[in-house]
View (cartoon, rainbow, N blue to C red):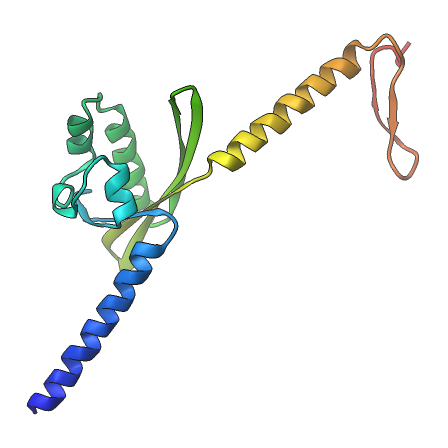
Length: 178
């Protein structure tokens, strides 16, 4: 009996080590919240991004505590609480993008709250965030270039007409309309 118990214990330890390795090595910021929106678990990436250095500094806290720690107003906490409640109420994932402007640099983090439901009952909220700054900054460059090109085409002194592969006109500028 003791040998079987030891085997079970060893198997559980191996599984815990395996799951911890996955949790810690995922590319995003990951957290688990309880029904009152308190932090239960967080990977080290999330903990470091929060300005804390140890899980126990964050566990049991909520977004309002986080704002207090950072010395910022509670606007973010109020917004997160609404998103948390929406995910609980709908039992569906909610997604948003946080924008940060620091040191003259624009940063973007896509975040999600995904409710963990068992037998139709809310148990936990999984929070996930991943830095999408490179993607968003590239999109912004493309949009600015497109706007600049449109402005050039619209203000050109020459007539500009664009045709598709079938020969149908898809664009013309004001000079071409004359």
